[in-house]
Image (tube, rainbow, N blue to C red; front, top):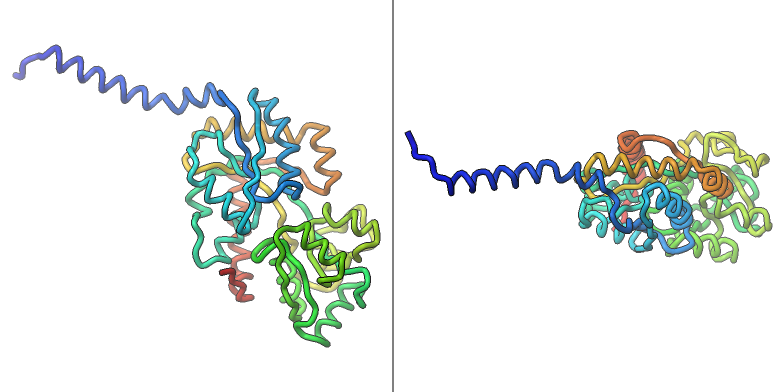
Length: 330
């Protein structure tokens, strides 16, 4: 029989207490979260669609959480700069990212090498919004419908130019998808952001662009660009005379334009649930909801798990298209 040693017993008790403290630490942190400012990283520049959504969310989320939510822009490399930054942040809920379908579902299929893993490096928190796209042309272009564009492109393969917010961006893939479905060749001219790309179409430096509807609508109303088709399941209420792509004769899927909030991998579920509830309350707030809809952002309700499933489905279906079309970004 071994002898009883008081000092050894004290050491054992101290170790057991430390293990118990570690075991309860996550729930304790979740119970007091947040204790200071939460940062919401946006992978686009100030004034972009994602930036507008983040700033509309931030104040209302802060009210729900009882702490400030500060928006921080980290633009660059089709969202890769922000994605890499958040992946390396502590998984404590204080650093979040308003990620888009481009970063979560498209980039992994477009780049041979990425400094992040969309499946492994992030915790999904909540869906936020979705948005439709519209194909627009310069007002002086010789085509005013999608059928006329296709005919012009077939007569001069590779001569018609289109702008995008960057290689691999949704605005790039959506136009490539249209071209692939129509059996035509267009020339891609990437820009650093959707604003410069749309300005290039308005100015006539480029002929076409697939744009987020909310950004293009003021220019359509001003007569600066001509809408050819809406990339959605149904027509836009403010553009009742503009057909959907399918109505215009192309059997292609609608372009996803969702944003979701994610954080670093390993976040505590109780913290995720608290953040999800704050996001859902924010987008359900009548004032925020009205502003989002006024910008043609459709608020999305749902769980973190539902958002992850949607991102995985888009990665699978659009990954197949990317491979079939041979689109690659260096």
